Image (cartoon, rainbow, N blue to C red; front, side):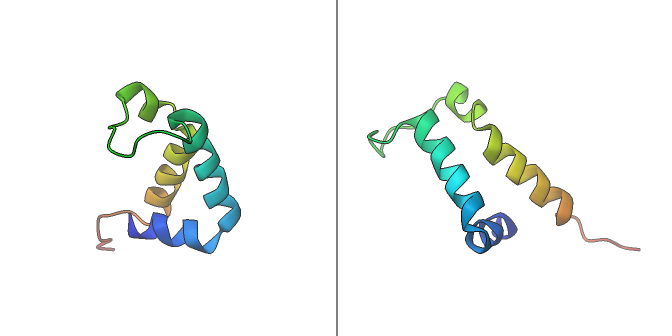
Length: 65
């Protein structure tokens, strides 16, 4: 997750796309105490792509070779 946050901070245009997607799926005026539903989280496609790409670039398992 640290690498994901790093890349979102380093590339503001990607951060803007993730924020726009979250605003469109979760709503801009929602109560922050509400927990997002599974269906809403499943619809965050760009965020999922960012997470998968970060995991590909920086796998959590230390390489032994």
